[in-house]
Image (cartoon, rainbow, N blue to C red; front, side, top):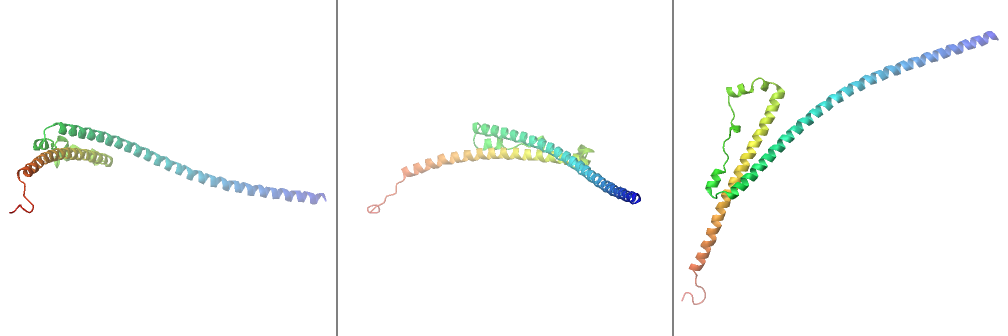
Length: 192
């Protein structure tokens, strides 16, 4: 009887040992799974950090561009207001129109050929440098275009204002004199 009991206990221990071994293998598999998930999460985190850095630098770039465009807009608005007030108080007619036409400034000068390449140097060859140079050149050209357009509009407004004021006064006076100097007879006894 004791022998059978010992055998049963031995079998129970063996079964427990096998169960523990199975649990250990399961834990080992879970550990490997968690390890691989951790590696994936680390890679995703690094990618997200890199994207965040890109977005932050792009955001700073956009903020700088916005600030530059805001300054240009304020400058253009100030110039427009100055032109509007000076053209309203200045002389009328073709003289004011010709004086308000835009002058060719130094900023609109563009070197060509060899001079242009020498001015650029090695900075123009780098991708980022050429992109920034292109963007600043586009902003500069847009500012010049808006300046010329505003000056032209102010000159055209002044020219047309002078023209219509002169015409309206002369036209109304000619109608009055024509009406008072010539009255056409009408009625039954007019032709007889």
